[in-house]
Length: 440
Picture 1: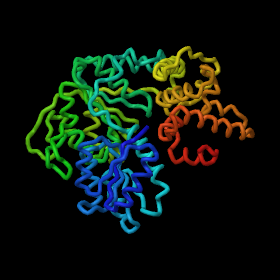
Picture 2: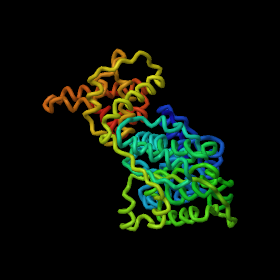
Picture 3: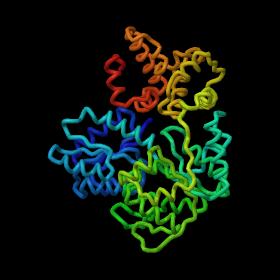
Picture 4: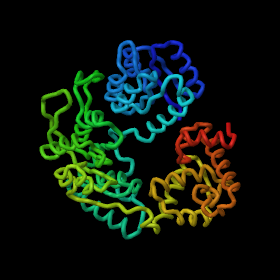
């Protein structure tokens, strides 16, 4: 993934040096020496990551982070600080900064950290307003009793306007179910609006949900419509609702009770008619006992609960789901005539799939990249097939991992962040393995 990077620093020599270093990594780099010029650039260009000095001539890093994250929540911000200003950097992280670096001491960490921040941008970017990609219940694959029961419940509740709470482990397909319920409802001609509550700080999440007026806070340069307003007439999907700060839970409860809300920086009451679907992988009853979740909000959300089963409890569906992903990624990667050996499915069936459907999806995509002679077999799944290799044969495992990494890097054309995503390892781990195996 090539990234668009904005560097902000009033030390011109350092600014130019960082620009050169990041440009050599094939990033698209812009430079600014003041907070004012940086905010202008942010309005003119689309950036992924901001690399900023913690103290600038016209701004304090903590406030700058808050201003940028409020207006551009999808951005990740890395702060550069002198050793004595670490406290400022830590405070800025509470305002939404991704991480910080100590100037001079952490220079070798800049590139890996930028890659990690870019990876987070790709994985956690909120789909603010989108029409559902998955259309209807036909896209829910499986014939196992557990998934058929969940699907039957979802089809019934879709015909009503009741609030729905989707529970289950991460990766079990909660957003697919949410969009299917929307598509099966009378609201399907209007927007399906989705947001992950765990992806934002309290302040940013409040702005995303309720919207704000120009001048409501530093960085609020124009009016912003919130997701509650965007969902008017349609469906609002709050993923990871258990991660919502308790202060915002009270405000959400009021909206659910009255269908009225007030934008940040405004006194006028607005109305929105939306259907709410929420999802969580947490035990909300336990969260209530610990004081992390409001009991009254839970009862508002839990009008109709549907629990999605983990993949390990519906192994009879695994082959059909895998075939679906093989077809999907074959088309995406422009592959034709892919053959599947029986041992490929045997390897898949041996795994517990703790990451559920999401993990299986990634495994299939990766195996299509790694396969030889257009044939999917056990060797196309080194992450999982290596369990069958005797522990004493460590050389084989190391050789397998090296080949695995080489193939993925060839596929991503040297893009380390994308390779780390496909390998399901952190970017820092990938750099360590590249060094370990001499892969430059």
